[in-house]
Structure formats: C-alpha cells, structure tokens
Image (tube, rainbow, N blue to C red):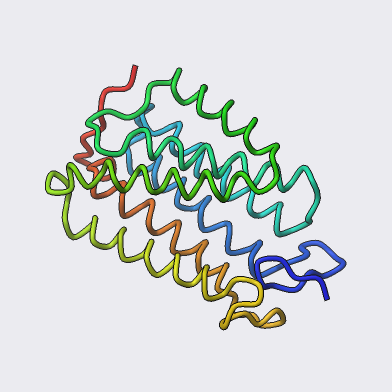
Length: 206
C-alpha cells in the first residue's frame, strides 16, 4: 500500500480524499484575508499565496505527479517567504518583492526535498523577527496563532508516515488537521497584525 503524509493512496481522483479536501481550508482562509481586509491591494500577494498553497495542496493530494508536487512546493515557499518578509515590520512586502519571492519559490521548488527545509527555515525567520515586535500586536490573537501553529506542527510530526498517530486508512488524518490549523494560524496572525476587520490598518504597499 502506497502512503504519502500517512494517508493511503487510491487509484482514483482524489487519491487522498481527506488530505485533499481539507486543503480547501487554506483557500477559504485566503478569501477571508482579502474580504475582511476590505479589498485592500496590500493583501493581494499574501491572499494569492495562501490560495495557491491551498490549491497546490489539493492537487498534490488529489493526484501525485511531478507537476502537482512542484505546484504544492512552489506555493508553500511563496507563502512562507511573504510572511517571513513582512514579519516584524510595519509594512507588507512591495509588489516587486512579491514577484521576486514567487520566482524564487518556483525555482527552489524544482529541487525535490528543498521545500520542507526552506519552509521550516522561513517559519523560523518569521518567528524570530516577529518576536521583536510581539508586544505591538494583539496578544490574544498572537497567542491563538502561536497555539494553532504549535498544535498543527505536533500533529504533523506525530501523524507523519510511520508516526505513532499514523493510520493510513482512517478518515481522521493528522495532515488534514494541519491544513485546518495552518489556515487558522494565518487568519489569526493577520488579525493580530491589524490586517482584518472594518478598521483594518493595512500598511502602505507600493
């Protein structure tokens, strides 16, 4: 039995229904990001990166091949890079920066296995930079984002293929839980940054 991210692969699309469908939570989070940000252009790059990450994960878990793996990895690197670039700053990345990060993510995603390492490094950079301005954020929402990220990371580790929580045939997939919690993490972080809501204080974006 072939297994990826713990869930067993089927011969029909979607090959991994639980992991694939749960990825739509990231697309929904992207809609929330753009809609609650009052349509500000500043959130288009983060929103697009989040939506592409969800769609990339949907197609990757729906049908495994070289292209869907690249799409999954490229979108993930784009999202992490944009969040890392904005962490600890008062401004969101400029459009030129967003384009550069998108191109870089697309190139690095061609190297199999590079995405996981670079994404982990990017999250580490984001957390380090954000720690400097932690008190300037909405602490309840930052706490929620940190908690969701921590639980999601633990679920990913414990539910990895061969891990103690791994049940390939189960409808309860830890990796699917990661998708849900990752979506919640980004929304909570955006709320902590003041990006969302009627009175959203979106940073200037040139």
